Length: 554
Image 1 (cartoon, rainbow, N blue to C red):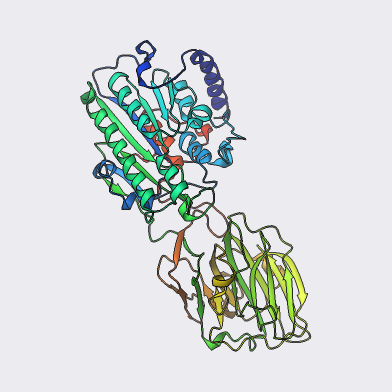
Image 2: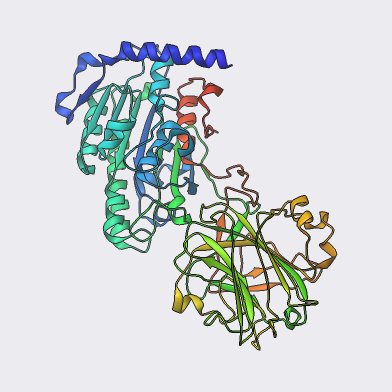
């Protein structure tokens, strides 16, 4: 296979030289050069063609709520999803590279809108494969964001750039559909993203939704132009509509569910309509990101003054901190001296343990790597207060990262109704006064025993099958927090003590498990566009291309 891949690349390089003189960069539709059309006369059978419309900044939830008759009119014969996903970094540059190259940013290298680090030689845009293997195909790209044409779209026969002018993009495509004969037609609109940057993202923003509905009108005009083509009866169009990224507030670029949420649609008149949703079996976790969002219990069983030895472990996923909102704990965090203990963020990228008894306090910073890389990290503490001053040991992903004496702190439990809290302190109001950190917490476990360092390494710290380790019988709380929905965190330990989520829980579908192993995508992803186009055009993809997406043709 390696030899075949090298031969293919050499062939593609040779073809690049052959095609160079035929590439056109043109302006608006009045300059169509009929002599440049390369598609040979087809046989009497129907010709397969592709229209791919990229709508920058279109969130799936906004598309679902929009009054969009043109796009929704495609649903009866489309595979579509309002829950489709892209990956971080959720910039336009990276998002368009995902769509047009069929691989994630870890391969194509585009992290932002400068396109610095683009590895086009190893992971080229799809047109390069198409031209190498089917050189007769006529490819056209019309974009409202010129960077797509300038930096991504390679080996297109025609490239038209019309900066931030969606109406002219529509006009140009309609004109070319009437006078030209494209096999693959790529369109890019920016009006939705521009409205989001000015007014904000989301179906609750009127101006954003108006931009979505205006773009739907442009799409309707393009679909009508396809139906009016002279040889429409002998053409079979695959229509793809997808967005490069979502957003939150007035920006994008991060890893929040709103930024990763996109809309995708794959339509053909022969398809049976299907809305693709995340199944209830998908791994979902609770996101704590706003005031009054926290979970807890007032069960007196969790009186940590009486529990003299215990181990606490939580899986945390975050992209950054603005405060030090507790992941888990049993204290009022208004003052460090207040009785109780907690695990919380430290600085901008690490974590710490903190405890107090009203008179004294202990603060221990983790010496482990950063935890703000949008991956799951298992944070664990063991506490032994049976004799002496008390001992604390900290672990990050199973590795020791701090230890300390507890300096005879007592009492270890505050006189408060809430005995343990997750996502806030025991008052449930820390976020209200000190900041809204955005993180996910899951696989929360407590044992009334102390794990040894040897066992921390022997048994996977991201284990979700706790019955396999020798501490299962000592487990006094195991809240997997994996949904699928609702406001109760069920307890899978022998104690069966559920926690209640306050403030309207947000359940986030995961693409990584707690060991950071990629999970199969249940909904379409932006990288699915390229393999779907290739399959429709009957161009066999090579494993050497290392595409990350899958063909979505039913």
